[in-house]
Length: 256
Image 1 (cartoon, rainbow, N blue to C red):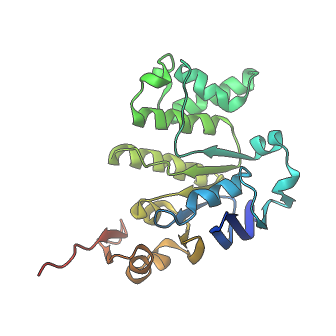
Image 2 (tube, rainbow, N blue to C red):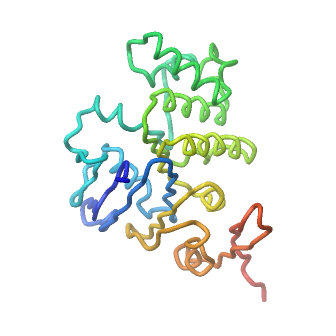
Image 3 (tube, rainbow, N blue to C red):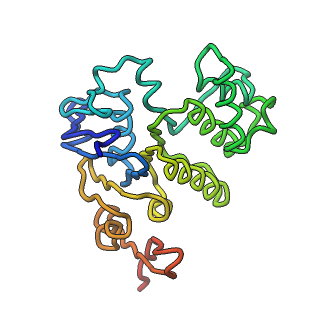
């Protein structure tokens, strides 16, 4: 099976700073790949390159057999949907209008069905007439996720989708994301929460200072020694039970 998306030896340089250096990854159909690393590691930059929003200084990105540079904006919109870290909507759009943005300016019957399905799946149908700006941060996050789900693409690229959610909302959203993957979608997501990646990802990519330093299955890759080195702080990985798997916790500094 050929990957849905792959990048090879991608580097991004801004001025004298190397943001990404020779990073390679791929994601298959029905797979959730998590991009992890400390602040400044290059996670969002890598996601921007994979989305086609940033052009790398070297290396290549392919959707299937086609290089990303061969796709125009309309083809990109049909190929991947992108959830950025921050969604700023200044105009007084309703929830339904924001979700409809995932289908473009002209809506037919099939488009409206996708909008309704996305709102139902993210549990925002009841607030369809409310202004997006009037919602809580968590509600806005769910509406934004519904918008990219309405886009109905094979590939979803998510930049910190759980960052503003409380623990209950986080779990609900990730169960939805996981269900999309189990149905055959491909998801690449940036996470700060290592436990979310441990629980839901099929593979993880660890970045440090723009370099890919580890990759593989979460339980094999997110080890205490690897994480402690990357985050420059002692981190423990503790197995609670066989059902939930290991959890990642920062170790408190020893007191004299």
